[in-house]
Length: 635
Image 1 (spheres, rainbow, N blue to C red):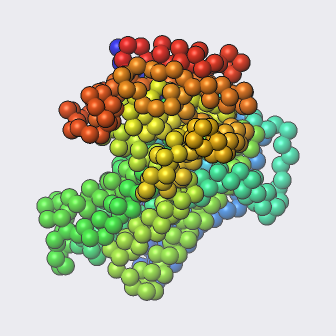
Image 2 (cartoon, one colour):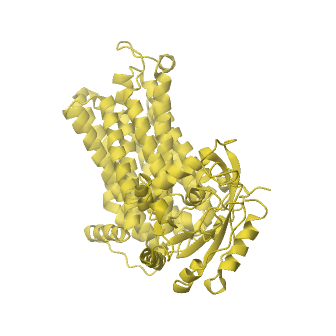
Image 3 (tube, one colour):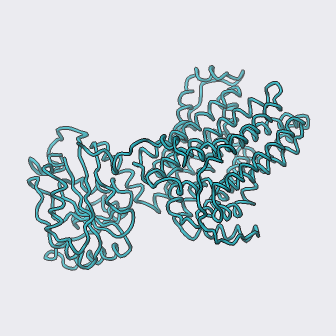
């Protein structure tokens, strides 16, 4: 029976987490909180806009933007303290305290809604922002304590899906309730019910022990902020991931903020169509977040980040030119807009921008959770929340400058966002070429073959390791490269390494050229030194010890060079075996490779990994025998 994945097939999908006590109460707690935040914010924004209309459009705009600022300001003020508290205390109890504070805030807000005290509601909006700021660090630092390693990606996907769905539902509910008959009473009832439900569900969250109970709380806000940001910058890859998440919120906030104007001035739609556009964008993010688990085989896959970033830019550029054929005049209803030529292109672009955003952001959150040590994890996430808020404020400022002061057309603004995101993606590719190369190679190999994996969990997630594999075709290295979520450095023949055009790809991928001692002893010595240096810094090295492609489909003798490498670098070895490639156009079966037309496409092939072999028991012959057992009768 063919293997189906890099790991043993999971018993159930990520949806099964919603049936577990260690995840479901937390999921619905954060869902109710995000829903309540947006119900409250949206209803208040509508109330302020209409209540202040007598004072002119400028007065109304001032109050609406003041409300937005009051909600986001607590993330700058309280996040450092929130991160410290989340690291110092048991998290489930801390969540219950935070949700109880939400009940108190919303109880006061319900009274203010009924009595029509809009300025009291503004003060309570600040308090609601503070409550959200304290919940943020607990939200993401709790997941690694309650989920297994193979559940982290799926759990984060569900959390992101739930967050954006709850934002959408809260926004729609807030807008609908406040304009209904007895709207203030309905909003008051809605916010207090959502808060009570959130608190009740939070009492079911299992305990999560304190990660740093000995931590001394620093109550000085400026000093604590400086220390929190310094802790985030201490691990450069983590800090870059935080910047990447903040960049997503910069782009996402820009799209969401300008969607009403885009619907009104470009698509010529009624207000009802705005809900459709926002819904599709949010649903796209939810779908992309959920897809991460399936596309990453339940393991962290940073290769989805460049794929998501590129997709956001491509569909953003298309959105710039995707306009409905509606003429200016009477605004179109939602149905009327959908019926216009070009409308489906707009809707599809928004959905796919959101989907690519989901693919982009979930691996970054997972990376931070997995990479960050538990005793400082909450403080690192607090730093992330602060930078997220800063980037969102910058996004609003850029929108106000370009669309307001400079009167840039909204389609051009969307094109500028796509261009800026493309440049950011190129920076990611330049600094981390492995993820770009792996994404391209993964796509190409999936177009050529139906690839199945077996036992790749034997390859360690970190630490120096040597991979050895049989050599069947010219695409062997590509298949191995695409299968690993950590960079693989191949030892390859110098003639291939120097091939025109491909040379820069091999160099970017960290390949190590080698030649025989008889032909080029100097290069051989240099190559072995490079292999030793790579293993000393914990890299993953792959060799094809046969030294050439098989001519008869059988595994030739392994050359003694592998023993020389292991003698100088006593690191573990993982044997690999490729199956099903003998007979492909890239193999020597029936003649020299690449000299005949392929007989079929999308053939089924397999890559299998065996148990780790310690260096003291690894010889050329024993490694060949291990690869032969893995391969079986098929080449």
